Image 1: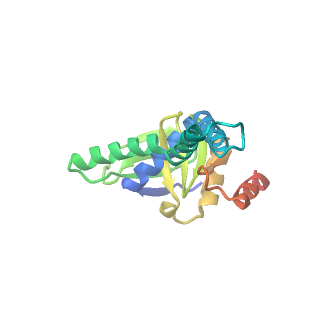
Image 2 (image 1 turned 90 degrees about the horizontal axis):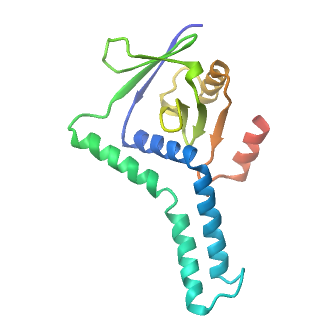
Length: 192
């Protein structure tokens, strides 16, 4: 196998995407409970479930709406804090270079001629497809992001197939809450 390279210039967008993917992957149950609670509260508020007196049903409706609208607030606030810290440091966002080989990949900052860090494919906790990127999770909180536009010489699907083959893990698609289309879910189920 001929080694290949992916260069990922980080930005506020990649930091935000990475944070959202980490939050979505590690808090799936909590998010599901939040959505179910919000829907039930909305149904109570519009009097489909139960008979709540007039002024109180508005509180149920309000809570249901706010719970759905603010579902990504924890991830967004974490991403915003991280971006502000990088900007306050006065340094540019880093650029990571990944060199993929037979048994793993090497990651180092761009311009650094040092060895970097070797990551074995066996260290993969999870492969995830979320929005327009592929994520290689080392654990629930640590992951590498590979945005689609950074993958050169092959398609994102081919890159995901390569990682799946090397890690022995399937690349699961995590759909953004409330924006997944029925067609994309059916396509994923047929492919998987």
